[in-house]
Image 1 (cartoon, each protein chain N blue to C red):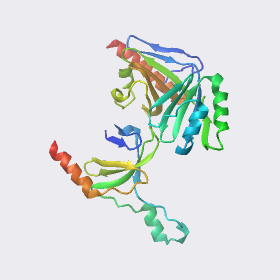
Image 2 (cartoon, each protein chain N blue to C red):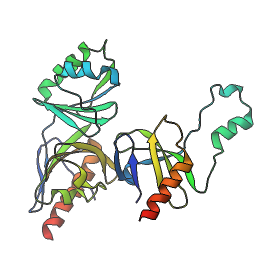
Image 3 (cartoon, chains in turn red, purple):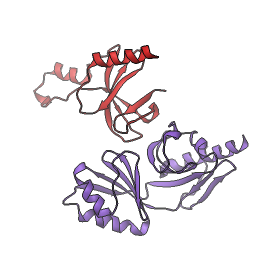
Image 4 (spheres, rainbow over the protein chains, first blue to last red):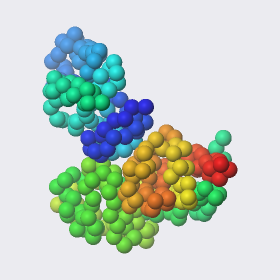
Length: 106
Length: 183
């Protein structure tokens, strides 16, 4: 079971309290009717599907009920960080170097 | 199998050497939601301080309030004081916009106490209960059902659970009570 840190509760809690909610930082277009069919399709369905660090949304559904964002490595399932919804995307290079340091300390 | 449980009759549901499970008398419950701007005025109107950290609770007389999320609180009070709460919040509505919903009948509360109360809860609750301080509470999950878990003493808990999930949850606790006593 994954342990996930909720940035609102400020606690690290079991995965069973959380719900996965897809890729993060996908902004809904202001005027969908102005968009081409291809652009709308891309907004709805096309995702980055990365192998490695993935920016994604989670919801603490059996807790504070808030949506938040996380960076999770899709290969190892390791969470690099979690942060509140609406905050900017954290710098991936510094997250990875911080993760590497804590790994070498073990 | 889910046993038939009469939720309108408060009383002991299961009792063993390990723990006891008791259905408590009904209380008035309110769900309160408001932004940061209105919190001070609502606190003054209610005569208590709305806690701001998730899981913290405060009590004033018979009214108990728990912070469930950054903008969400659960209020418990005696049924006779329900009208007072409604009036107090309504009086500050213009200055402190909020949503106050009465949900008294949505949930029932069971008390779990006894030397193995914490162990009994591990039956369905994935949390590390050692990290839940006495005097606080959390919304969490118990075998798939959302619950609010109040820790009143080291081995005394209350669980608020939605009425429709209660027979399932209580029958699990009854089984657990028996099994832990047999160990």
